[in-house]
Length: 259
Ligand SMILES: Nc1ncnc2c1ncn2[C@@H]1O[C@H](COP(=O)(O)OP(=O)(O)OP(=O)(O)O)[C@@H](O)[C@H]1O
Image (cartoon, rainbow, N blue to C red):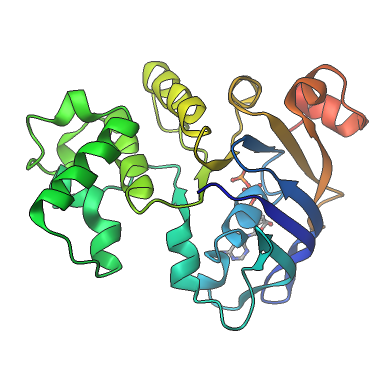
């Protein structure tokens, strides 16, 4: 199920503006890769290029290659909708469909893919996805209540359940805990740890402790200067990146000297 991602010479544009320049990176399967770096260096932009969400913005495009287990995401015959099904995304603010029930929220991806399911099959997807997202015990008695009736941390786990219900190969998470309290954050971090047995996970985070806790490898992005594109400065095993990075800018950022 989980797949590795190989990015070669990727440039990412918003119209004429080159936001991220010349990224080369391999993201391994069944591991967590963290993207860190100061505001505006292109972490979210790069993340969105990994499931073709970037091009949803008018005038936005990329050049270079993104291969998922050798398959070119940007090949002409590749359907972006299918790409987004295989490479799921969880956003900063929990965004369940507010009027849909908890169960319908979990099934929303399936419905979008117009997958017809028997009731028993749908019930099974709901239960399994909520179990995997660590939310089942808390919501099993109220599956028909609206998604908006849950707390922020529960809503984020519901969004994770929705993302994994379609059995993606990769899970992209853009600051998934930044709107959550410390207890919910810790629940989500445990969940990430659990999910990496089956998924390729990429997480953008501003929280250095979180990157150190949850990730196996860390990628540090930075800007060469104001108005310059973001670049991948250093990539390495998380322990090494935090204890003994090669680049002085990585060290300065991790130590909180800028950003
Ligand atoms: N929709 C957009 N249209 C034009 N430029 C954009 C758009 N979104 C982001 N940018 C620009 O692209 C660059 C990278 O932004 P991005 O949001 O990817 O950075 P980031 O590292 O994720 O920042 P943060 O940590 O603050 O979320 C910035 O210069 C930003 O202004």
